[in-house]
Amino acid sequence: MHPVLESAARRRLGVFTVADARRAGCRPDEIRSAVSTGRWHRLRRGVYVETATWLALADDPRTRHLVECTAALTVLGPGPVLSHESAARFHRLVLPPGVDGTVRLTQVDEWRRGRGYRVAAADLPAGDVVTAGPLAVTTVARTLVDCTREWSVTDAVVALDDALQTERVRREDLRSAVLAQSHWLGIGEAGRAVDLADGRAESPLETRGRLALLASGLPRPELQVELHGPRGFVARVDAWYEDAAVAIEFDGRVKYLNPHPGRTPGDVLWDEKRREDRVRELDVRVVRITHEDLRAPRAVAARVAGLLASPLTGPRRFTVVRRQEPGATDAAA
Image (tube, rainbow, N blue to C red; front, side, top):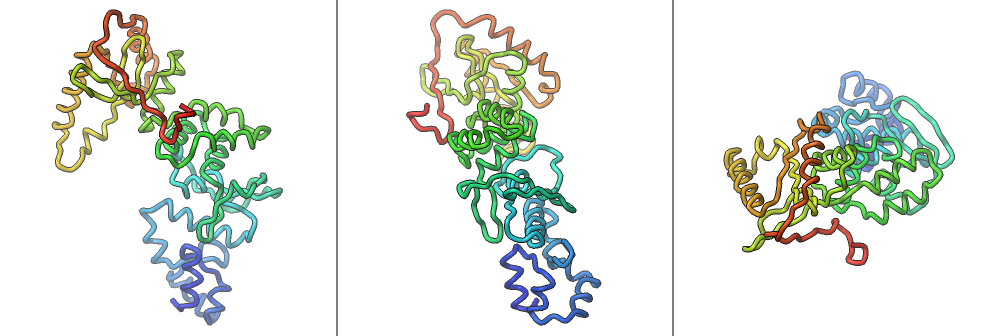
């Protein structure tokens, strides 16, 4: 590739235009040849990426989507900002299953739709936008609130929990973003999702399980509570009901099927058994919830409800140490 054309492509994640090629001295017949022979992959009319670059991204859907975003913005010109699911991909947020590849954009006072892209009309205060290379993108907080106005409550809370847990967003920024959109369509759902979010959840299964318990009418459990016995730390449990001394463990298959290097599934299973034995020795009741259990949440809720109906009486053989949400300050705790 000509150095001038290579420089233009590098500034746009590999994307370049016919105008860039002409500035690099490419003749019309050379451009037609590059397209017809497959050396250049057409993204949009007059917008290309080298085919080798495009094929190399086959196993990287996030970057491939950002290349498509760059191509759309190259055609649309200045004004639109990456938003919604496209911004969520940029920020590596958790997306719902089955999200399509539509390029999502926001522009002040202009709504439009075209092949493979959709532009929403909305305010874009300077504090809601960050710039990264050729892309202007809504911030993590703005992106999450934009998305949660459209997603189901479960998908929204899964994404919010993960962003809070990894400290990519602060709860106060989410609340500010909700207040800034107070009259926008769907903001009530977004606000409720933010209230339900808890950055102590460490996996989508923990989030989905917690929401299933709440949907069944059970109290909201505490998350990531440490149990200490007479000889010190025993275990940290995923969820905890204090009065009944009931621990909830959300049990995914990955840790058994794909253990850390140097360990076998048998090692993991044995360690989990011994850990649960130590917890039960404290007179704590343990309920394990799997992905499969969430297909019949009423049965799971009935098991938990039965235990909650009989609070632990007598002296306790353990003490509880509670964990703050990541990023929380002492004043907010």
